[in-house]
Image 1 (tube, rainbow, N blue to C red):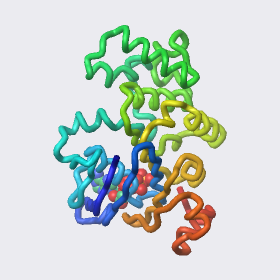
Image 2: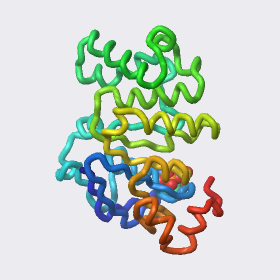
Image 3: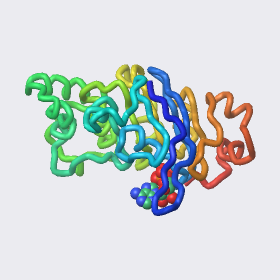
Length: 243
Ligand SMILES: Nc1ncnc2c1ncn2[C@@H]1O[C@H](COP(=O)(O)OP(=O)(O)OP(=O)(O)O)[C@@H](O)[C@H]1O
């Protein structure tokens, strides 16, 4: 479904991502786990061409992403940003409708879809659709961010620290809600996180990143049972500074 090969990226001569390769099959869930500055976000943004790599390729369904118009590619890949990324001057319903509008869906269809997503995410049209992001709690904003990413039913979800701004209790609850959401279950997911619990609970594969490289890739069990080196072992046991 998504195949990254030998991705490289430098900013101002400083290497951010180096020789990163992975394959995520249809329905797969890859977690990119690492400390701050290890190159996770840069890697994620090279998948939907928000950043162009200096070297390497990304295939989406076997096709080089450079052959797609970026906006067409991005409609296939819902993007959930750090800090929710909602437009502050749009209501909840308007935020969720952004991609369906671009796709020229008619109003009743957008309304049905928005109502349905709000309901699935534990919100409601009557209570929330006409509110602005700053009227919502962090957890509610995060749900709206997910609803927006899911609105046009893209096959892929790219998620960048989706729970990063939430307190630990809300974080655990929302992570559990995401896992139980039928729409989430059917997606191919690449998610960036520095939280080992996110990675273990949501991922079928975890790529541990350090200094721009993936230093180990495996299932949660493989990583826990056979950490490749002391860094991975320490990271998995939460002994490094994972801020
Ligand atoms: N647009 C940019 N211009 C210059 N340097 C950048 C840019 N984007 C990222 N970097 C640098 O590239 C490196 C990797 O950053 P990246 O955001 O990919 O890491 P990350 O693992 O996602 O970290 P975080 O969890 O803090 O977001 C860092 O050293 C960062 O400062």
